[in-house]
Length: 230
Image 1 (cartoon, one colour):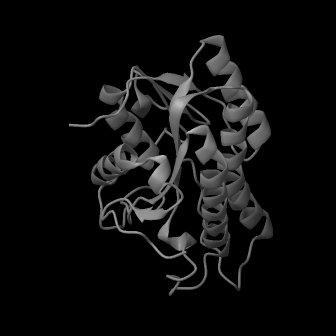
Image 2: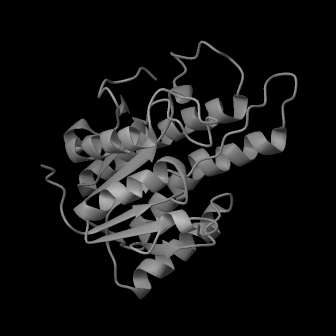
């Protein structure tokens, strides 16, 4: 049985993939589940508070929109899950600088900006938790494949942000976790992968449950629970 507090969970990038499955799995555990997306899809369903038109390639505008939504409804966030992400597979020969930059903005900068915006607007509840959905691709130690510059660099940067956030937010009683969701069968992986989105989301929920200030700031494989080297 999960010990998660009732309250408000906020999940970014919840129109598909891991974000969508995770939002659905958080529904029975939280009083309110707020989801952000660029465009709402039928897959999201009716049970959520939906903040649409949230484009995290403009993190400050997107964060302002989220904060306004929360303040209008007097919602304080118990759990923030930064799951929005983009991936393009450009290698050394076909490097697309604009796309590398956009991946950095969405995957690394946006989670930091949104977390800071919630903090500055007093939108976190006491003992809140913040999660960054990272990727094994963000591990420099485990990079055996090369390539995918934008995605790998952006996820390593997201890990760096998560580590600093964990240190800076610990005195406030806010725990920050960095989770690799597994190699998940989603649109992003072209349906390849060895874990279903449901299993991945269930594993992430379990790691969120275990997350506290004392074990924050670690890069964890959600499926196995094992720490991944930076």
